[in-house]
Length: 273
Length: 254
Image (cartoon, rainbow over all chains, first blue to last red; front, side, top):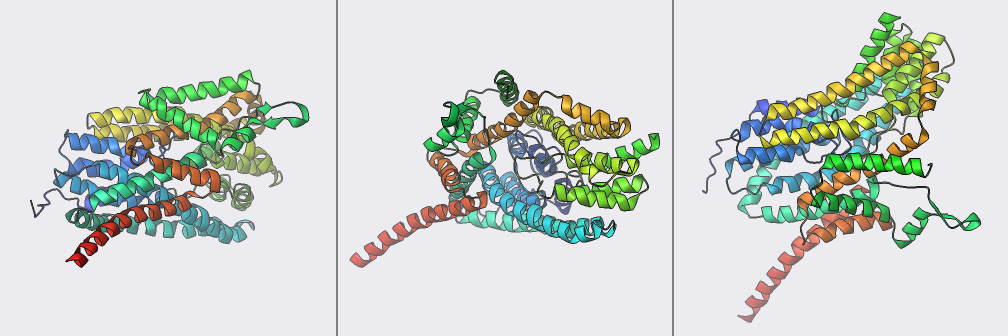
């Protein structure tokens, strides 16, 4: 087992498919798992090619593709490239622990999305708008054309080379790492970084700010102020804990979702918010 | 009027397909306004209204789990209103903002209920390794959302602005507020699913570490990730360092 005969190998065709399919990443966005359908859509040709039809590995790979995903579309191909390389290794090596793929995905998407959102959706878009605005406010059609060019030319360059780099370097990294037994450490590190990223997202992206006042008259203060005194973002943590607990009770996500909607509307109706 | 409505529909489809077409920002007011101007025969006004609305929504950008108002319907209706009625460019803002909010709450509803249901169906297809089925759920999500939203935008253009304004004002406040609160809570489900995937007893403390860094120090997610990398490096290299030192001590004894 020293020389891994790479009988299952991705070709240019599948990589091109990732590139074009990645362009649809955000179109099936949803509140529950965000880009999971789009990401899975980009990866299905790879999984289809690499794993035997109907095998357990293939089933797990498809399920993995449908996990939560949140990443800037333009940098998504970097992650897809790495994922494809790891999936290739998974298909050729029977001892490969495929939980590593989920861990690497989860730990990389946070930082990649953070950097991508601020660099592309933030900075690059603002630069493009600023330059285009001068023309557009005069009614000059050059404005919108420039806007699209300034934003999209770098966007597509990043998308193309991200995939190339992710797949080639990702593959080299994985094979080297496995020989040296670094893989276990990578999973450990990825677990730490991934969980810290989830923790930070819990505090940043969940919000609930009910206008409930405690006390009366002049001394009335919003409930949220009291909660913040105990611990900032306590509500967010409690909501996360509740969902975590419900999932542990094997409650279906659709029911949690509908329940949340009904309760929120009912609360607003009852309290007249 | 019918031809114009049809053209407006085509522009709306193009706008709602933005994230099908590489998230190329064709959904931005500057581009939408220009296209509306093009199909209604007044390119210059279209570009100018688009620029005005672009400034209104300059800060609006989908980041993480927060979605900005639906700029596509708002820009189209607002621009068309100015071109058709010949009113002031600023008038577009008053109409575009409520329209965009109304359409966004409808869109949110689809992204909260319909698309997650399709994702659940895709989970089932994954169990039987039916890749065509998984892909199909993705396509259905596109067709439902783009179809409904584009048709509504075209109808909005057809029936005119007064009807739309009344509709916006007629929805009970408790429903829109309730949906707003739900929107803030629902990401918790996704995070919980994610955490359940990679957590174990040894690593659970790091989830709280990341949380506390944001709760008490207001760090950004990039900042937390950078700290996470350092923490991971400390743990990895320190255990290595300890092993090496023990070896070194052994060497000295010989």
